[in-house]
Length: 333
View 1 (cartoon, helix red, strand yellow):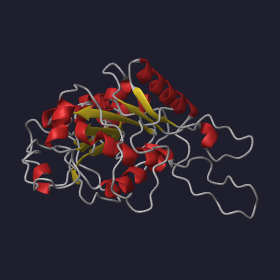
View 2 (cartoon, helix red, strand yellow):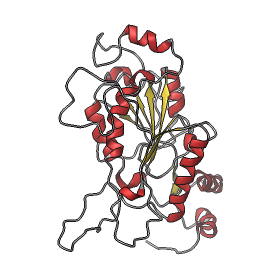
View 3 (cartoon, helix red, strand yellow):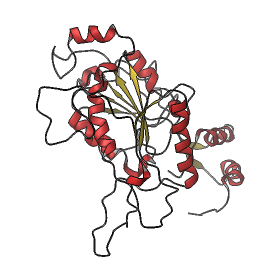
View 4 (cartoon, one colour):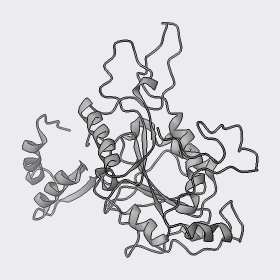
């Protein structure tokens, strides 16, 4: 193997068109990927282009919230700076309250900071979920995107604070970003249609299967996509092509898989809703509640109280039954 050092702008075109290069693999943003693809047109070279996209996880007719919580937590590894991270959740309106009751305690419990930050030399190293993003410039960009999305109408469900991080005294924290979650970013917001590549999530609410697929396709393609659905047949793809999820790439293998959620390759189809689940299965709203919701256009069921005992020993941080939710890139891959 030969390693070349230099700027991509100068080296890229030379390498792409060099007769000594028989095959090419590219990982990066769409702009540079487009230039590489254009340079390959008349070469006949074998190639693989992996480009950015807004990976989305759809939540539809789903009830395994404890199972989903583990995946939500693990999704923040590396500060969501990996190609297979999920920064977008597209949620059925009737499940928004249950989703938030699962999601908010997870995001509020995240620990970040310096991996060697201890008070005394003999103390155990802290257990953290992620560290800094790739650069101070990237951190500033993420904060600007959150502010811009809120200016354009997004609702802040959770915004962490750097003061909650674990740091060494006097440490430069300019490359750190506290986790944030925004509801319904506006269409003009960069967070609506592009990958943030950092610990910033967006949540979009939908009312139909067609809208679910459309919102999961907000960036016109992604590396991976998932549907969380209790019924495998209901969520299974009907084939390839057509009106499904327009993934540009094959799915990369991940170290975990949902138990009931279905993880599919990047191109999915809309056979998504052949409902076969028995009436009353799960904890979805009944017909009367569904009708009431439909009479209030745009209404969101935020976390609601339940007479049933809490699941396991988990405690909902900052949430009381019936209370509203608290309001408080490109780098190497």
